Length: 376
Image (cartoon, rainbow, N blue to C red):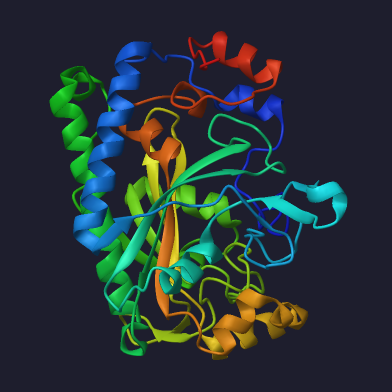
């Protein structure tokens, strides 16, 4: 029996018995550990340079910790179940203390940074973001340690539409597809692997359209099914409540705009100026999320979404006040998982093969049984 409610928050598997059934049994890495490190930085440099070219971004510094009172940290979902790590900084014998949080994402900080760095519409920033998400279940593609290319670009009110979002998504896909070819050129053994290349173009669907195709399936199963036909997709409108009474996935109310009315290609009313890039991973034989992004809330949709989620008290926080008072630019932005992307492009079966973090012994043992060895 599928449980749509349990499927809303977080894409993890949930237990190691199920994971044992999921991990591939015929895996052999095309790259040695040393070659993997060389490939990681070749791909990283390519993606960063070309994202900046495609989207007119500059690389900037990004925080690892933020003031807990600022409202800048990302809570990832709307129910507050995934909370940041907090700690107290005594500072000056506790005369001038700070309560701080480790960032979970730089989503809100980036928009503030657009104003800090004086970005005009059409200009933006790219960060090499590091974060900790302590509430994830740790499996082969979810880690407590998160690395992302977090980017943000100032826009005008005219840009707040589905066509503009689509054009930006296509630009990002060109970069990711180019990075794959760059990796293949440098390491030809990747091209010889028995896995298909990424498609040249994404297929675009609204979350409502995918629900119509598979009305009885929960979100992850719907994504899995559609990726069998279209191995790389962008899903619009994640966060808005769909026809079955559930959102495609829970989304926080104060960064992406998932409430704005839009129109589908066949003329039907839809909602949401945000979405995700997902692909079929031929190594793990599973759905694989690469990026979340969206046009950000303005003063009107921020209030709407906070009212829907019963979080209007957030409006008292400095970040939210800055949106209400037009002190920070309208923007579009997103995060692209670095290790997730490296895992896909380098044909790896586990995030731990491309990043160093902590893993439970049970997961390391499960991997070793299948010729998957994580970095220590």
